[in-house]
Each structure stands twice: as structure tokens, then as C-alpha cells.
Image (tube, rainbow, N blue to C red; front, side):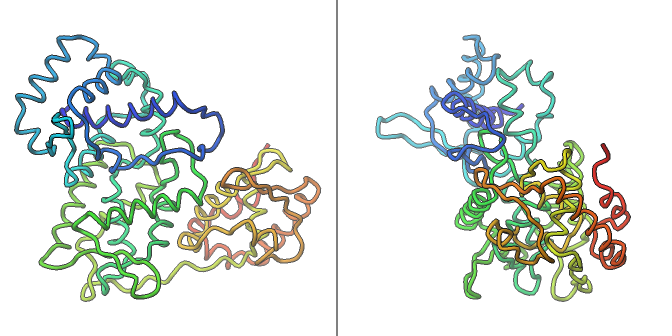
Length: 405
């Protein structure tokens, strides 16, 4: 493993250990003070003795004084090529030399770190990492891509080719959550509430645009949009580099089904879509004819193992977007709208309760049975319309049956 990647892993896992030492993380969702881990987590300054401390804390290999000496002398002091390629060096106010990873390499180092091993394999991790549980918490469920790579992919796939692949930031965040599968981003290893997650993802995107040479921002249309810089063949170069990068990652790393589908769409593009070679517009997904309360009931029927037990709205929304692509690029229904039965057909008597930044939805068992019957009758009368709005129409019958106990 290359030195700069080892240092990157040590920085992040040291932060994770400190966070868990100082906080009690025993809920199903992330604490309010959780910290977003991103490629920018690697951008900080440390003197060499601090870096050595991180290495000793994270890697048992460096308990040996000889191995520490080897790291300092061979891997750092005598490795001037690596240091000059990956680090900025500057003296601090105490006249001590500080090492800072260069911004231009943060994304590639971050991806190298995520793809260096199978972070789900705790049996293998325990042989070279002191606390494998921390590595699993923050790496195992994370897409093996930097935020810069993810943003570029989204703009190529969903942006407007006639407007430098521009896409509004709200739609970008929707794709990050629904298609890329970003939901666990912090040191706690727990899933974030949607409000906090969206806010943090927007902050990362805005920071990327501010410091990265590949992106522009535009607010001329009344809302913030992000686009690619297209001058002097920049798009063709970025597209080719992305395809090579994604090919390498998918050939050496496990990719879950949702992310694989997203990446496959990109890899099937022969060239960047442009105004001249853009394929015929694909009609947007059809809106399901099911009213909101029927969709909620359908989700509860499939997600609640015991009739009457509450289900988090974040899980319900994942179920809905998984089966009905129309909702991929729409905002999740807020609690206030569901309380006021916006988009409902008749009364439904859902019970909604705030839970952290999320909320739960439930139905009393007797009301659930009645509403499930209404949904089944509606589905029988509107089979074609519902199936035409589904990602996998053949699943309608299975969904209508719900969980089989």
C-alpha cells in the first residue's frame, strides 16, 4: 500500500476513533453532531510527529520502533518524489514543517483509500488495522467514488448538454441519494436524517465547485445550478478519464446493484452527449396513478413485519423510489403535507411521529387491513397504468401481496 494512501486511511480512522471515544452512538440514526466524511476530510495540516501518532494508533505494524523509523526515514524523508507529488509543505508559526495533501490529488487518494480492500471483511482487516469496526462503520456502505467523480457522473448523465451539462443542485442531491445510494456519510456510521443529509451534500457540492477546475455555478435562473467547464476540449478529456476510472473501480471493487445500474448507464455512453449527437429524448417516467395514501399503504404492507408497527419515512421513500422512477427526481413528501393529507384519496388515519430528523408512519391494524383492501381493488382496476409507471412492472403482484408471514 502506497505511503500517501496509508496516511489518508490513518487520518480518517483516527478521527473516527476519537469521535466514538467522545460520543455515545447507540441510536439507529446519526447523532446531531456527526461529521461528514468526504474527500475534503483529507485536507488538513499536520507535523510529522502527529502523522506518526496517527499511524501508530491505526496500524499495529507501527508499534515497533524499527517500523516507525522505517516510515519516517524511508517512506517520508528519503521519499522526496512521493512527498512533492502529493503534499504541500510549509512551516507553521512554531517553525515546524507541516504536511498537507494537495487539493489536486484529494479525489484520487480518497478513491484509492475506498478501493484498497474489502472494508466489509473484518476477518481480513483485523490483521492490519487496530480497530476494524471503525473502518467498517465509515467505509463499508460508502460508494467507492470521490465526491468530484460522483458530481461529474451526474452532470454527464442528467445535465443539459446544450447548457454545459447544467443541473440544479436539488436534482443533483436527489440523484446522489436515490441513484448513487449516499445515505451513511458520517463518522458515526449511522444513517443521516434527510434534512441534514441534503444540507451537507449541498455544502460539499458548493465547496467542490469553489475549488475544482471542472465545475461552474450559475444562479441566473433563480436557483443554483452546477455545470461542467467545456472550453478547449475539457469535456472530452474529463469524460475519457471518468470512463477509465470507473472501469478500473468496477473491475476490482464490489458495487451494489443500485450503484452498478447508475455506473452502467454512464459506461454505455460512447461519447459525451452534446447538442449534435444527443440521443432522442427519453420520455420522463410516468407518474403512478396511485394517490399518496395508497403508495404509503403499499410501502407499509411491504416494510412492516407486524401490522401496526411504525416505519421510518426514509425507508418508505426508498421503497417508493425503487419501484416508481417518477419520484427519483422529486422531493420526499414532508411530514406537514402528509399530516394535512395532501394528495390523498379520502381519509387514511395514518399516525405520524417525529423521530430525530426523520419521522415514522403507521396505521392501526384494523385500519391497515381496510386500506390495504382499497389499494388491492384500486390496483386491479388500474393495472396497466400502475405497471407503466413501475421500474419492474412484473413486481406489482408481489408488492400487492406484501410481506408473507
